[in-house]
Image (cartoon, rainbow, N blue to C red):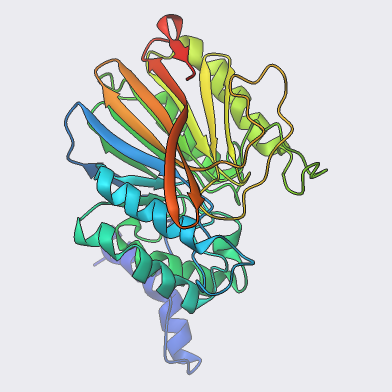
Length: 335
């Protein structure tokens, strides 16, 4: 007797039957599209987290790739802050396909795992160096909660963290579609949406490397900034962007969106030629991490700068800014 269900199941199995008749031993079904993971972190307001990047974990005897004493001092200081989590703006290791670099990461950040501090990373260009498949294997081995997601979200109390992969198109393609869906459906109890990715939409440095280092902003991130600035006037939650790639600290304000460049994690920092209109001015080399203190309807981001003199750590806070959930009531102060 004809059965629509039996006919449907038979048509699904025909490709495998043909494979068997031709003498092959396996039949592989077409893989389904991978859905980026949505992580949930138990946190209550007030809480604080750390954002920074460009650490370049690598052989500590090799001082060409990075500044190992600075890197280690920053890790230790972050552990002492005991944040709810750490967000990386990319370039965690020097070479993503080098298993030894990741072993240095394992060793030097063991104190964070001992304290059970979650780490939410964004992929940087150095994290993808070499054979990309090997590099991503090393990366996801350290961050199994990501379930192989190159971009993903994290919900923590009154905040939503959207971590992007700037090696992919952030505005177009499947990542752009995912991002648009997230921005279209921000929960009503979210005060702040943090966007984390490696390449900055705004920077006063440039590929000209006036002072020995720097990168120009790329068109893809500039397009992303336009998307955010077009949405911000119509969005109750406040957008705050953290990126790296430039080995220094910058803060920019555009269209109600605050942009931080935090690439002072130990990759050799360099001065940058700052635009006169930049809210933060400095001719210094700024190794640092950012402490983000989240409260109801407002947060404070403080740059904690590290200078090592003969092995002794000198800490200062050259920049601090308060950001309100409503763009119209924001206030900033530098000190």
